[in-house]
Length: 361
Ligand SMILES: *Cc1c(COP(=O)(O)O)cnc(C)c1O
Image (tube, rainbow, N blue to C red; front, top):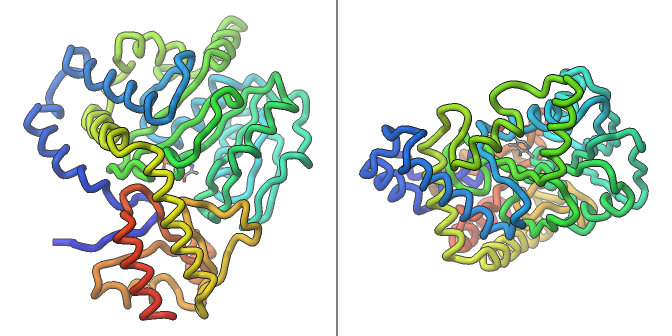
């Protein structure tokens, strides 16, 4: 039996109630029921309503279930871009999103920042021809965040362009202002503490209108997961394909738990735990901040430069049943990434920090 606690940024530790929800899913035969039946429609609606409450999503936004955030990147370009997109790129996730645009034959304008750096919206001029603006709330590879007040500045200068926020490794932490953005999305294996294989896409009417206008012009916007197709089934609490019913059920249950706990409590705990980790990094001989600008340091993905590789750190943490994440790709040995998700409790974070202080000072 693996008793280890994972402080890794994706896949990541399961939320503590998942085991009991898996049992109730078996009891209710969630893996067997038809996705065209009443039981599934109730699960779909429960997940949808719960997410709307949790994130305070206005009624003119739709919530759709897809297979992953990676799929959502592709659907955004297909459904909402005729010619040009604009992307703030400062790490591998934001970069990959921008590549989808070019791979689908569109022109992608890139505003680039170095790894570990972020963006200063006052200094950014989005070309007028950009139909969509793609922002990453939390660049999971580097631990750089774009604060909500910075995201909101894009709307002031760009009234026409649709604004998409990749909030995959952060929601429900950020209190997004839905009057300033058109869409956001996440996948469940990060901060929702669930097994991977489900992406949630939140879009407003402007995104729907854009997809429909492209259709009217005779453009292809994809096949089963176009926005109009998602909406036409979504209205009946269904999906175009046989979906990941199992995970939609588990998500609905974990979101119920989050709502019972209260999103404000989750946000406060996230800040408390982030402070523990950052205070430790500041005082440590082995670690140092990977993100210089304190305003842009992530609350959910704590990244530090390290003198000891994550592999060696994890060897020492192993007897205590804990593991942290390595740096991304070429930063594998020189950085560590520590998840600070709702599934990592305050007590567990205290235990981790205490043990790291003992072992590595
Ligand atoms: C993990 C991640 C993705 C991709 O999510 P998948 O579920 O693997 O498709 C996209 N964006 C960010 C910021 C991520 O952290």
